[in-house]
Image 1: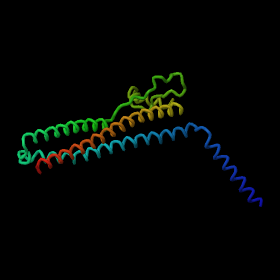
Image 2: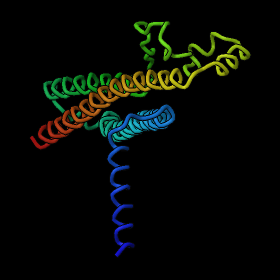
Image 3: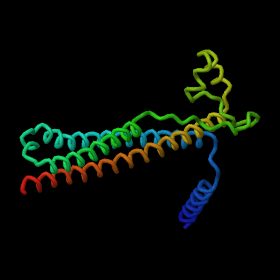
Image 4: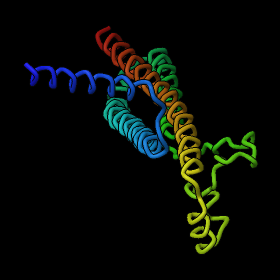
Length: 208
């Protein structure tokens, strides 16, 4: 019986500790680990966006093979009447405009992007003001020895603040890339629809 009582006491003690852990604030090192995890997740999202953009380019290449083959068929174009060639030219022009839009969006989705950390409103008197030991723009303003000295004097709160600022910049970059990828796939759908209309129109003209 006393053994059961001891086990019950230990169980309640563990439950109390879990409750305290779930409601307490993170200490400095726990904040650091959580911020590093968030930073790695942000970089993973950037990689995912880049892979999605590259896949869209592969699909675009496959779609463009169809009109390229059609344009090399001089006999098929010559068999069309003047009005039919004009109609096909109009559809081709619309497809070319969509293709240009698609290429611009692909560049927007894949280019590195640049979002400077926003610390202008951060008072220099604060103890957690970022020390500039992680962001490349502030690192290259110092010599290698000055950069090392800055690392000797940095506080954990400053390091965590700088990580938080970097994550904020990465979030803005991810948002911009996400919007660009959405527009990219919207253009890809429009290109597929336009290509389908082009093939349907050519099929109707050939049958008539």
